[in-house]
Length: 328
Image (tube, rainbow, N blue to C red; front, side):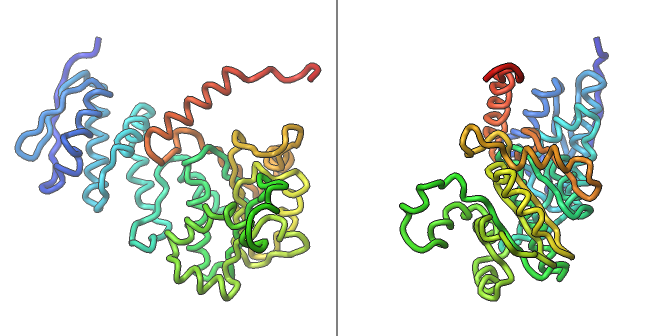
C-alpha cells in the first residue's frame, strides 16, 4: 500500500475560481479520480493522499495554473483530459498544445488543438501535401481542417479554398428537393458553411465566394478539373466510391494541399458498395507525402456525453463484429 504524503501548491491570486470550477467541481473531480484530498487555504492548495497520486494531482494543478495565467477558461473537459494524460505521464502536453493557436474565430476565440490526436493531425496538415483525418463525430476533423485552410488563405499560401463532399446519401431523393441544383446540394454542404461562418464571418465568406476564391461544391463538380494553388477539403469521404476517390485525388495540382476527412463507421453507401476511403487507406498507406491520422473517442471535444456515446458504440460494434471470411 502506498504511503500517505502531502504537498502544497500556490494558486495565483484571482485564479482560484477558474481553477477550482463552479462549486469546486474541478477540484472534486480530481479528488475522486486520484483519491486524494485537496484543501484550499490562503491562496494555496494542500494535497494529501498516496504519494504517486499526490504527485499526479500536483502536476495537473501546475498545468492548469499555467493555462489559467495565459487567459484560458478552465473547463470540465480540460480536467478530464488532464486526468487521462496524467495516467500516461503526459500531462505537460496540455500546455504545449495550448501554444498552438491556428487562428481566431470572428468572435475572437482562439482555435487550437485540444487533444494529442488533434495536435498530430494539425502538425500533419502543416507537413504533408495530403492528409486523411479519420475518426468519429466530434473529433474536430472538419473544423480544424477548415481553420488550417482559412489560415493558409489569409497568409497567401494558397489562392483559394475548395470545400467538397459527396451528396451520395441523397441518392434519387435529390430530385424531390425544391430549387436549382445548388439549392438541392446545399443541405449536404451545410456543416462546411457553418464552420466557415464561425471562423471567417458571413460577410467575408460571401465576398470571397462572389470572387470565386472560396468554392463549396458537391464532389461531382470536381470531375475534369485540375486544382492548382488551392486548399481542398473533402468531407464525409466514407461516402465516396473508390472511383470517386481516385477521380478526386487525381485532380490535385501544383501548390495545393488536400485534407480528406471521414468516419469509417458512418457510411451511407449501399450495402454492397466499397467505400473510397477504405480503399484509399489500403492503396496509399506507403506513400511518403500522405499522412493518415486516426482520431479516436479520446479526441472527442464536444459535450462529454458525446465521448461516452462514441465509446459505447465502439464497444458495441467490436463485440458484435462478425468474423471475416467464409461464404456470405
